[in-house]
Length: 94
Image 1 (cartoon, rainbow, N blue to C red):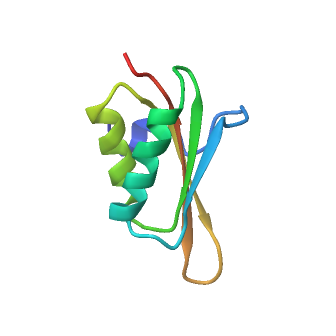
Image 2: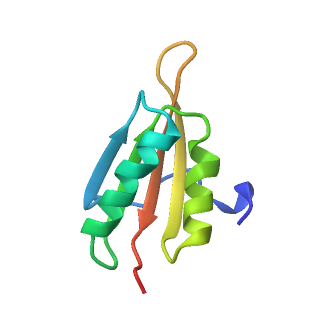
Image 3: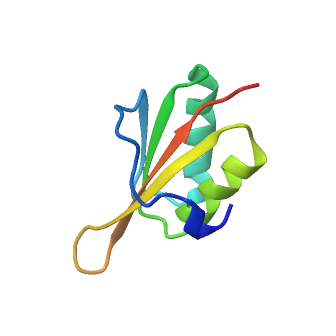
């Protein structure tokens, strides 16, 4: 999936769970996401909030390597130099 194929807005649904990884690096953040993925049922929506600029690549790779569907990645500026990324995944275990 190329960057242009990923919607830049999230789905118009309320997420079933949110993992707040703002201020954490992707390595510790991905471990928290993995735990959340195990807890969610098929069809659930996971929202991941991050300030790590690698989030756009990391979560795209996660979706490509699993059955989970990447629904969108929003980029918002929070402050002068900081960006926040909000990723939406639809969970599929099978």
